[in-house]
Image 1 (cartoon, rainbow, N blue to C red):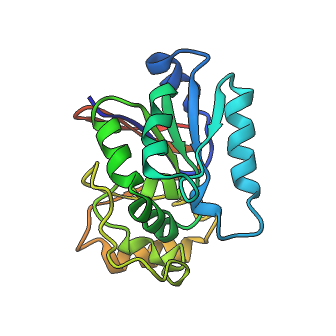
Image 2 (tube, rainbow, N blue to C red):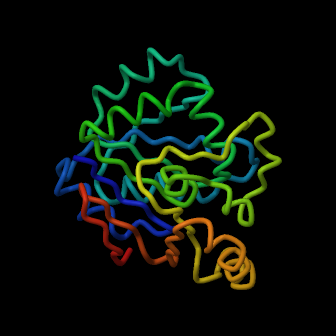
Length: 204
Protein backbone atom coordinates (compact mmCIF):
# COMPACT_ATOMS: atom_id res chain seq x y z
CA UNK A 1 0.00 0.00 0.00
CA UNK A 2 1.31 3.44 -0.94
CA UNK A 3 2.16 5.59 2.09
CA UNK A 4 3.08 9.23 1.44
CA UNK A 5 3.34 12.52 3.28
CA UNK A 6 3.52 15.45 0.88
CA UNK A 7 4.60 18.60 2.68
CA UNK A 8 4.47 22.21 1.57
CA UNK A 9 7.27 23.52 3.79
CA UNK A 10 7.29 22.65 7.49
CA UNK A 11 7.84 19.14 8.83
CA UNK A 12 5.58 19.08 11.88
CA UNK A 13 3.55 16.14 10.56
CA UNK A 14 6.59 13.94 9.96
CA UNK A 15 7.01 12.29 13.41
CA UNK A 16 3.48 10.93 13.61
CA UNK A 17 3.56 9.71 10.02
CA UNK A 18 7.00 8.14 10.11
CA UNK A 19 6.90 6.67 13.61
CA UNK A 20 3.66 4.84 12.85
CA UNK A 21 5.10 3.32 9.68
CA UNK A 22 8.81 2.88 10.36
CA UNK A 23 9.41 3.41 14.08
CA UNK A 24 10.82 6.30 16.12
CA UNK A 25 14.42 5.69 15.02
CA UNK A 26 13.79 5.22 11.30
CA UNK A 27 16.62 5.47 8.77
CA UNK A 28 15.55 7.97 6.12
CA UNK A 29 17.14 8.31 2.71
CA UNK A 30 17.57 12.05 2.18
CA UNK A 31 17.50 13.25 -1.45
CA UNK A 32 18.69 16.88 -1.82
CA UNK A 33 18.72 16.80 -5.63
CA UNK A 34 16.12 19.49 -6.32
CA UNK A 35 18.44 22.10 -4.81
CA UNK A 36 21.74 20.98 -6.35
CA UNK A 37 21.67 23.75 -8.97
CA UNK A 38 21.65 26.48 -6.32
CA UNK A 39 24.52 27.94 -4.31
CA UNK A 40 22.27 28.67 -1.33
CA UNK A 41 20.49 25.56 -0.06
CA UNK A 42 19.56 26.75 3.41
CA UNK A 43 16.10 25.16 3.35
CA UNK A 44 17.64 21.76 2.66
CA UNK A 45 19.89 22.10 5.69
CA UNK A 46 16.82 23.00 7.76
CA UNK A 47 14.96 19.90 6.55
CA UNK A 48 17.90 17.63 7.26
CA UNK A 49 18.51 19.02 10.74
CA UNK A 50 14.79 18.96 11.55
CA UNK A 51 14.54 15.27 10.70
CA UNK A 52 17.53 14.56 12.94
CA UNK A 53 16.09 16.65 15.75
CA UNK A 54 12.91 14.59 15.45
CA UNK A 55 14.97 11.49 16.20
CA UNK A 56 15.47 10.05 12.72
CA UNK A 57 18.73 9.08 11.03
CA UNK A 58 19.30 10.62 7.62
CA UNK A 59 21.31 8.85 4.93
CA UNK A 60 22.31 11.08 2.03
CA UNK A 61 21.27 9.88 -1.43
CA UNK A 62 23.01 11.94 -4.09
CA UNK A 63 21.17 10.42 -7.01
CA UNK A 64 23.08 12.49 -9.58
CA UNK A 65 26.39 10.84 -8.67
CA UNK A 66 25.28 7.30 -7.80
CA UNK A 67 24.83 4.57 -10.43
CA UNK A 68 21.33 3.12 -10.66
CA UNK A 69 22.49 -0.23 -9.30
CA UNK A 70 23.89 1.47 -6.19
CA UNK A 71 20.73 3.52 -5.72
CA UNK A 72 18.58 0.42 -5.78
CA UNK A 73 20.75 -1.40 -3.24
CA UNK A 74 20.91 1.66 -0.98
CA UNK A 75 17.14 1.58 -0.56
CA UNK A 76 17.35 -1.91 0.95
CA UNK A 77 18.70 -0.50 4.22
CA UNK A 78 16.26 2.41 4.50
CA UNK A 79 12.92 2.69 6.25
CA UNK A 80 11.68 5.68 4.22
CA UNK A 81 12.75 8.25 1.63
CA UNK A 82 12.58 12.03 2.00
CA UNK A 83 12.92 14.25 -1.09
CA UNK A 84 13.58 17.89 -0.27
CA UNK A 85 12.65 21.04 -2.13
CA UNK A 86 14.21 23.17 -4.83
CA UNK A 87 13.39 23.21 -8.53
CA UNK A 88 10.84 20.54 -9.42
CA UNK A 89 11.83 20.58 -13.10
CA UNK A 90 15.46 19.86 -12.28
CA UNK A 91 14.37 17.20 -9.80
CA UNK A 92 12.17 15.38 -12.32
CA UNK A 93 14.90 15.52 -14.98
CA UNK A 94 17.48 14.08 -12.59
CA UNK A 95 15.14 11.34 -11.38
CA UNK A 96 14.47 10.26 -14.94
CA UNK A 97 18.06 10.56 -16.19
CA UNK A 98 19.45 8.43 -13.34
CA UNK A 99 16.70 5.82 -13.40
CA UNK A 100 15.73 6.76 -9.85
CA UNK A 101 12.18 7.58 -10.93
CA UNK A 102 11.50 3.96 -11.86
CA UNK A 103 13.46 2.52 -8.93
CA UNK A 104 11.65 4.67 -6.39
CA UNK A 105 8.25 4.12 -8.00
CA UNK A 106 8.59 0.37 -7.57
CA UNK A 107 9.69 0.71 -3.94
CA UNK A 108 6.97 3.18 -2.98
CA UNK A 109 4.27 1.08 -4.59
CA UNK A 110 5.63 -1.88 -2.64
CA UNK A 111 5.17 0.04 0.61
CA UNK A 112 8.31 2.14 1.24
CA UNK A 113 7.07 5.33 2.97
CA UNK A 114 7.71 8.46 0.94
CA UNK A 115 8.03 12.00 2.24
CA UNK A 116 8.38 14.96 -0.10
CA UNK A 117 8.69 18.65 0.69
CA UNK A 118 7.79 21.34 -1.85
CA UNK A 119 9.40 20.09 -5.10
CA UNK A 120 9.56 16.64 -3.53
CA UNK A 121 5.79 16.77 -3.11
CA UNK A 122 5.08 18.22 -6.54
CA UNK A 123 7.02 15.63 -8.53
CA UNK A 124 4.72 12.73 -7.58
CA UNK A 125 1.64 14.14 -9.35
CA UNK A 126 0.44 13.65 -12.93
CA UNK A 127 2.20 16.72 -14.36
CA UNK A 128 4.43 19.56 -13.18
CA UNK A 129 3.55 22.07 -15.90
CA UNK A 130 1.57 24.37 -13.54
CA UNK A 131 4.60 24.61 -11.24
CA UNK A 132 6.34 26.62 -13.94
CA UNK A 133 4.84 29.64 -12.23
CA UNK A 134 6.73 28.83 -9.01
CA UNK A 135 9.95 27.31 -10.41
CA UNK A 136 11.90 28.15 -13.55
CA UNK A 137 11.62 25.35 -16.17
CA UNK A 138 14.69 26.79 -17.93
CA UNK A 139 16.81 25.47 -15.07
CA UNK A 140 16.18 21.96 -16.42
CA UNK A 141 17.09 22.34 -20.10
CA UNK A 142 17.24 18.58 -20.65
CA UNK A 143 13.70 17.87 -19.47
CA UNK A 144 11.64 16.71 -22.45
CA UNK A 145 8.29 16.13 -20.72
CA UNK A 146 6.55 17.65 -17.71
CA UNK A 147 4.67 14.42 -17.02
CA UNK A 148 5.19 13.65 -13.33
CA UNK A 149 5.63 10.34 -11.54
CA UNK A 150 1.87 9.83 -11.47
CA UNK A 151 1.56 8.39 -7.98
CA UNK A 152 -1.45 10.61 -7.27
CA UNK A 153 -4.04 12.24 -9.53
CA UNK A 154 -3.62 15.79 -8.21
CA UNK A 155 -0.99 18.45 -8.89
CA UNK A 156 0.33 19.56 -5.51
CA UNK A 157 0.79 23.34 -5.34
CA UNK A 158 2.88 24.19 -2.27
CA UNK A 159 3.21 27.55 -0.52
CA UNK A 160 -0.42 28.36 -1.33
CA UNK A 161 -0.60 30.89 1.51
CA UNK A 162 1.69 33.11 -0.55
CA UNK A 163 4.47 33.45 2.02
CA UNK A 164 7.12 32.17 -0.41
CA UNK A 165 5.96 33.41 -3.80
CA UNK A 166 3.13 35.85 -3.06
CA UNK A 167 -0.60 35.33 -3.37
CA UNK A 168 -0.80 36.96 -6.79
CA UNK A 169 1.26 34.15 -8.32
CA UNK A 170 -0.83 31.49 -6.60
CA UNK A 171 -4.06 33.12 -7.81
CA UNK A 172 -2.71 33.36 -11.37
CA UNK A 173 -1.69 29.70 -11.30
CA UNK A 174 -5.23 28.77 -10.26
CA UNK A 175 -6.72 30.90 -13.04
CA UNK A 176 -4.48 29.44 -15.73
CA UNK A 177 -4.53 25.78 -14.82
CA UNK A 178 -7.62 24.89 -12.77
CA UNK A 179 -9.57 23.92 -15.90
CA UNK A 180 -6.83 21.50 -17.05
CA UNK A 181 -5.53 19.92 -13.86
CA UNK A 182 -6.84 18.82 -10.48
CA UNK A 183 -4.89 21.20 -8.25
CA UNK A 184 -4.23 20.57 -4.56
CA UNK A 185 -3.21 23.81 -2.83
CA UNK A 186 -1.26 23.41 0.40
CA UNK A 187 -0.32 26.17 2.83
CA UNK A 188 3.14 26.01 4.37
CA UNK A 189 1.72 24.52 7.59
CA UNK A 190 -0.18 21.77 5.77
CA UNK A 191 0.62 18.38 4.27
CA UNK A 192 -1.22 15.86 2.14
CA UNK A 193 -1.41 12.43 3.77
CA UNK A 194 -1.85 9.55 1.33
CA UNK A 195 -2.45 6.08 2.75
CA UNK A 196 -3.61 3.70 0.09
CA UNK A 197 -6.85 5.12 -1.33
CA UNK A 198 -7.25 7.54 1.59
CA UNK A 199 -6.18 11.15 0.96
CA UNK A 200 -6.46 13.92 3.54
CA UNK A 201 -4.94 17.27 4.44
CA UNK A 202 -3.24 17.38 7.84
CA UNK A 203 -1.60 20.12 9.86
CA UNK A 204 2.18 20.35 9.71
